Image (cartoon, rainbow over all chains, first blue to last red; front, side, top):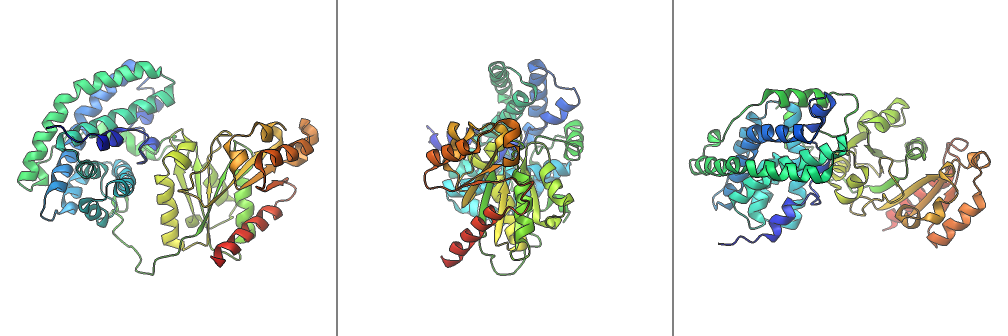
Length: 231
Length: 220
């Protein structure tokens, strides 16, 4: 079956107005500390982010999509709380909620859907959950949601690295493409995990991988003197 | 619920929906006097109107801090949006963070007037009309008297063009008549104000323009 992809391409586009441009995906904090200096470092950083946060957000996005497709009412607050539980850093929870509400604002206008209204009624839901529901509203499936979550994780970090370090954007495009290929098994595993969790109506079954350094750096970044990016 | 994980569903006031304030965008290149203009408008209008300010800094919250330090408005009426190295994106291509900020201030204070100051950018950086009702573009004579002729969407299409620092004109060899004439030529009927905010800190002509907007908004 061919998915209707036009809406998904829009969701993948960094020009889609959903607030992502103000976030570096943790890149600014590592650049400031001299831990990321060139395109090679960026590739290593991306692999680390995919293995950690990527595993979680891909599964949450896939779950959000499956939940949005369900006919019966969804306890979004419970799933949202599961994302909070997997995001120990308050600064990262805030970054996720800010981007979630921005995406929700735009998605509701572009693809009106009851699931998006239900999420909005919840307040400021986490970004990955909104992304999944937006994919469903745009006519996509859980696989696309997981892939898009990884795509945004990689894309936000790469464009921030270009802006902060003046890296060659052509080389960075190659780095991103290679990292995306290496991330495919993560996205596949996320789809399976999300299917399990949704089938058993058990948010606790979502993957929960912790990566302390990005979490700690995010806290420090939020308090730093002159950050260019919000996170 | 812990504050840093607020979902937004907590503590929402039960009061009636606040009305939409007049939203004015204030843009222009670095150092042209945007923050000075915001401060002047606040000082002049805060006694008669409920005001709110959103700043968009390239670096952190510098402009918001300036406004707070100078006490032009209470802290809670100023919000700073961070723009991730891309100030023009936040006011034009992806206005979501600024909309969130304006709506938060509107819910909290029900302002009559919301000023949204852009980060210093270049002559092409203008506000989306999805974010503001009208916009002011601020340039200064020290940037050269060719700026109005060179145009760019800020100079040609802003609802008000403010040419600031006219006291410096003799020092930088800028011809104010040339600037006035060129502005008229590229802007047609749209108004232009030549001013020195240092010498006229009350920003009289700009305040008059804002007042006339508020009057016509009230009539609608």
